[in-house]
Image (cartoon, rainbow, N blue to C red):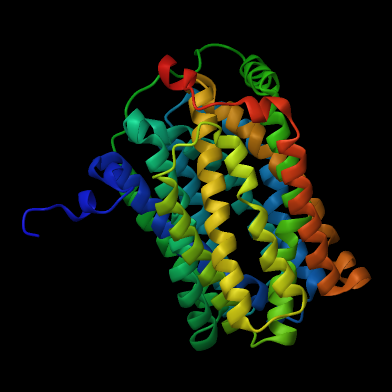
Length: 417
């Protein structure tokens, strides 16, 4: 209809009317497309270099280790200085890393260990970016649109998977893995430009002049007092240890050995992305009184993806399961992020987020390091069933916690803001 805003007509997208959030969303969308292209390209770059499951796990672990080492530092600084400044600096470093990575592959120099070193630096920069992003969303959007905003932020990896999966598989097939990673570097540059033009609302930050240790202790105290959040993080450790390696190490190997290689893996990733988009649009309409209960109960269908991979089923069946899995995972994640934001005041939000991210990530390098041995010991099918057990254990652990079941939709963190 003439005169009707497209953004206003689409459900769950009203927050895009706010310019700062629109720029933030677009910057993350571009980065997500590039990241997915790189995630498709990296395993096949390692395979092309003659590597196997152990080498893929080594490279992925090299990204996870600095997340564990530097997330707390990143959380403190994201509560002390401008979160936009932290995000831009992180994007500059990651753009340089991906450009160097692509150059190494194009020139055929360095080998796996050079890639490991670059990936380590990339992970260190990401450790500063994540807490800053978790804290800046409420500065970019009005409180009444917060869950809607988190739903859209959550679908940036989704659209990234949809577009990046297709583009990544195409780039690997027609150009090379190096070409896909070079495009990822370019998306970081575009994200930097968009963030530079964004104007985020000023909120209370951590008190200046205090020691780093004092700021860190305050964040730890705020985190550990929230028993429900501690249990959430413990549950997420199951994902980091067993589920993520199954997806990112086992998935490409199943595609390479039993399906059609990079094109099959890209199709599966793309349908995960379509599920993310579906979930992101659905979650904006949900107003559950007990958001954490719904967030975890709804993840149960996610196990279908791993069951389909364990067979392995035809690509179309795996893709359909991936679509369902992506839908429920994004609904769960959006409800969880909105709940954390409501329950944590702005001055400590990034530090609490860094403790959460640390707890979620600490098992990931262990999982990637063990991926090769697990696959060698119980096979690819057994690895997928181990991931199924981890998902079910996560749901049982969190929903078995009384404070999780009692958590309602009140918002003391937003009231304090």
